[in-house]
Length: 221
Image 1 (spheres, helix red, strand yellow):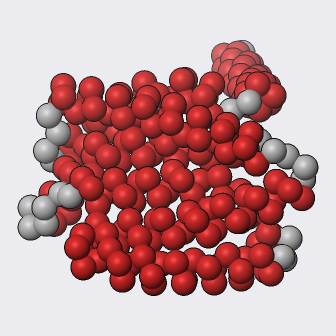
Image 2 (cartoon, helix red, strand yellow):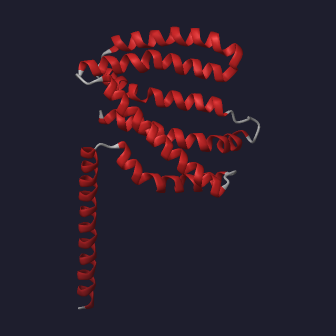
Image 3 (cartoon, rainbow, N blue to C red):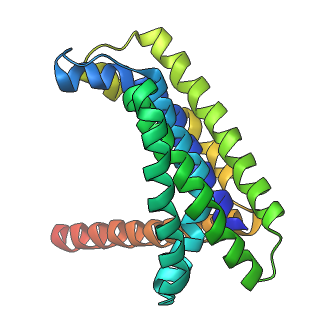
């Protein structure tokens, strides 16, 4: 459950941010030669978010050497992407190809792998999807809103502006994302470990400082 929330939320965070910066980035990268297509970028981002819950199941089967279900899902994906792209490319060009690939991937890998994985671990598929996509939606709205707001203030056009936007975006969304992406037990674990590391660092600095003071006194004598 927690893994799906984390992966879905992460996809939502970067999806919202990408939707704002994709235009300026494409302009810089191609020197203005390639026009920004929001529908094309939107299709890519939607696919990433829709596929986020399946990434957990994918890792489970890959690292446990369970190729059978992966072969079935990939085979269904290949058939689906071929059929949908043939239908959509003619009328919708690159956007149709991106949409066809996304739909095919979700209907095969995106549904089949989570269904099989949740069934094995006795977890409700509906509950898993609901929590994953709720985190993704919340993170997307947060990320897009913050990035859009800073972009309005900065009016980003160049590389320096994008760096500034990225830093300000990260500064604002870090704390809300901590609560949005992690379960309470995970937040507690992070705080305990971070606190322990900072405590060790503080003790080390104090020890170093006291050592320097002792050495200085010895030299004065």
